[in-house]
Length: 126
Image 1 (cartoon, rainbow, N blue to C red):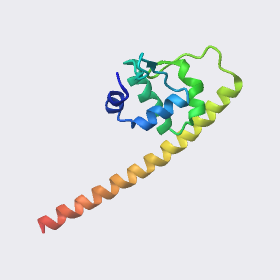
Image 2 (cartoon, rainbow, N blue to C red; image 1 turned 90 degrees about the horizontal axis):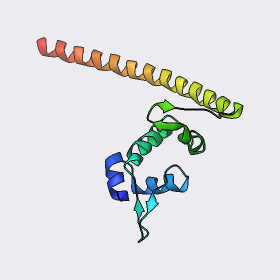
Image 3 (cartoon, rainbow, N blue to C red; image 1 turned 180 degrees about the vertical axis):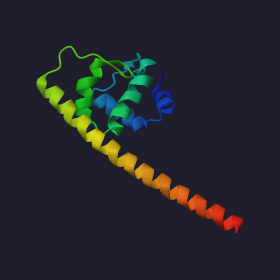
């Protein structure tokens, strides 16, 4: 598939797809006329990359762990170095802190919405 189709299917701007290629995160093949040809498997790969970026992992770490990801959520580590494990543990802990903060904020917003809606119901019944 061409870059435009991959962009549409993944919701990823073409510029970011080119950046992922520059960083070695995806490797499309090239047609004889030089156009990039994206394999169907790259739809899932781009989703993985975006998820890891959204989680706060930098591209240099993503590049290191991508070869270990065969499918979303399936990880095989046969040659993990102590440095890689320490880096991933640090990133995991940082993500856990973000999850706690986001959960707290989500719950506060939910409580606020519940109070606002209860106030609206009280106003309409009065």
